[in-house]
Image 1: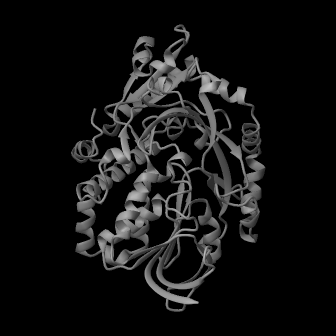
Image 2 (image 1 turned 120 degrees about the vertical axis):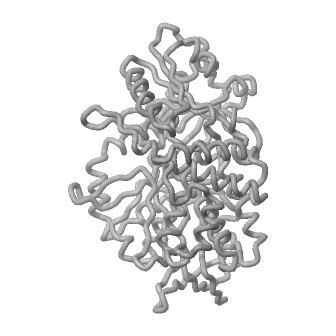
Length: 494
């Protein structure tokens, strides 16, 4: 058996792991960093472009980020927080483009207007009120609203052609929304890391055991599935960024902070258009309202995508129930994640969210015609022969302890760290990849407190992310300055 020693061990090769490794390498290039991936290539699970929506989530179009509370008031705080977090990602990517660490922006990010589209008087009233609340804040000052049929026909001609012009409809629009190929972005980050002296990448390598050592380090047992070679790595810090696989790895660690966590896996499917005549009539991401009982990841949207440099048109996602935690996982993943400490939260969620489970099963069993009818709510002239069904990645929503109900289901992302900061895991789904930089900054702030206090690390972070340590939500002038620069550097200005 081979024995190795590293400062940082990163498990998984998706956008989160690549972002954390890139940040740490930039802050201290002498840190030895090892990345392990169980598959044969980088970013092949949830981060791959075909396995996610590719939306640069900024709260511009996602109506589920502005819920209506019990008093009938629209809450915008989450949309503000997500927007500010995405601006942090844009700053980081801009800095890496300027340093030639990332390629030309069009290889991973493209300007794609973000629209919210609704129909029916109640939904139109909701969208207008949402617009007024968001527009009043400087983060959303460039948002437009219209309930004029001809204006909407200019914004999204494919969707408005052949639609009843007497139908009550409305939309909001932000011109500099984005489509992000997170797979290409991640592979570029890992390619750069691989050129660094103190970074190693091990593919086809699986974590079998994690054991906490007396010196505060972790002993991680690895298996190369191709060569069957076993390796033991002693790491000062371990990051579990394995997407749906992070929960089971966190459980292997046995840290007290992992107790009570469970997972609720959700599958997804896309309808993909292959007709260039249709694809070229649409250039935006248009989000609607989710069906009652639907999880946030199944908010319907008709999206222009640029995947591996090729323009595509996708509609969905159609959610479904699954027991797999990863697209290339096992059907016993859910069962294997059950522990004594998470039984109560998981049974509580099963009891209180039976409607969600029934909805997901119904979605998974729907007919091709039913899927087409949903698409036709967005694109009335959709022809079944132009579209094929493709499977998206799996998403594992967080289940955690709750004092009142025993357990609750979370639809965001959550970082779990040990008390001494020597291990961290990223759980959950949306907005996920879009806020990867902010999420990984949180990991660094929790787990690298001492070096982060040094002037060197602070200065480097301010260079990489000019708004670091300040609030884009509160500082209008700061937002104006950084947004102007990132839109120009990433070629997102219209």
